[in-house]
Amino acid sequence: MDDADYLGFAAAAVRHFAQRMTDDPEPCWESCHTAGAAWLEVLESRRREPGEIERVDVLMEQADKCVGSREVHRSQETLKFLYLRWRDGAPRVAEADVRAIEEIVRPLYGRPAWKVELGHGSFFTMEFGAPVTGLERDGETVEHGEWHLWVAMAAWRLETATHVVAASEYPRVFLQRALQALHGQSLDHITIDTPSLETTLRFGALRLRLFPVFPEDPDGLGDWVLWTPGGCVLTVGEGSTWTYADENT
Image 1 (cartoon, rainbow, N blue to C red):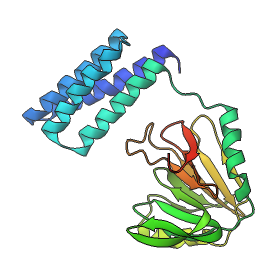
Image 2: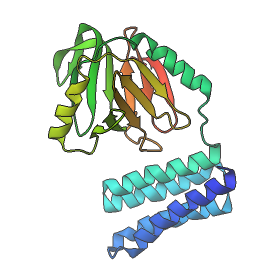
Image 3: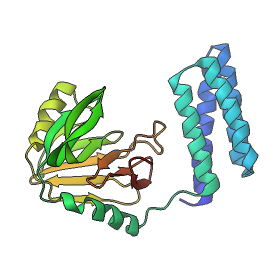
Image 4: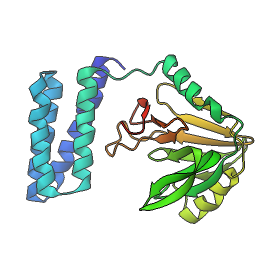
């Protein structure tokens, strides 16, 4: 997507937001409309001065205080993301990034998954390697693996070559039962696609596919996160980004 196409996409998103604010009968939404109009002005005039994002940010914060809803907060984060991507250029995910991630996860190949547990919503965790005690959760020390995988903000689907076993929006009681199919299954391979960093984990006949759904994660959780034996954490997600760093940094 070139600069002109991206600008048009971003402007359309802002215009949609501003129109929604205008259509709402509540008077306090007027501040949201003002904020949306300000973003549109910046995008259509193609201004990239440093002060522009601060100016529209203030307007969005005023709108958020007025309405006090998560919808406004998420709209603010989305519009900020669109502006920064346009101003600074979309991040590029190269084959070198994919190879780097694959090297980090390669020691997992051949290891069986255990303690596969559904958490909040469709989030879930699984363990690999020898048991280790020391992970803190709700003030309690719990047992985990040398490798601890947390699937967080990604949508996901568990499937075979012929049918879908489960998907992240299925009822929780169904997800809990379906995820147990991964318990004891050895991880054969992990495939990562560019530019989205969509990830596929293969466990024998089962494929666990992880799909990015947010261009940027406002909660900073990542699509999926892997704690490694060396004390480093691999975080894949928040758009086309990834990090690998010491867990204490």
